[in-house]
Image (cartoon, rainbow, N blue to C red; front, side, top):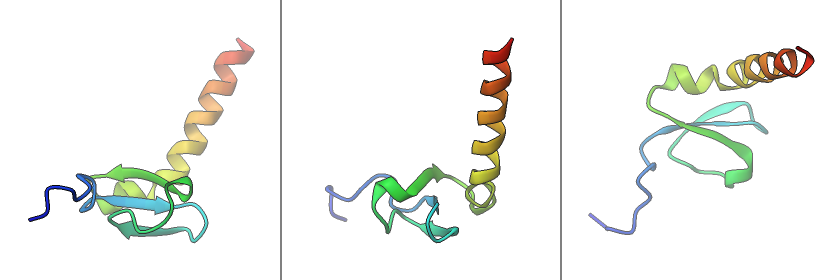
Length: 62
């Protein structure tokens, strides 16, 4: 095994451009959210980002 391989290579990533889950970071890091240990978590990444943004917006309004 090559010691230079990315430690996150086997994890799941959500691609914000294609809206697909990638196994291992296949695209440019600017297009990816992750890594996630489970495919389901990567699939829900955009919804989680949206929920976090809404929560932060509410905190700023308080």
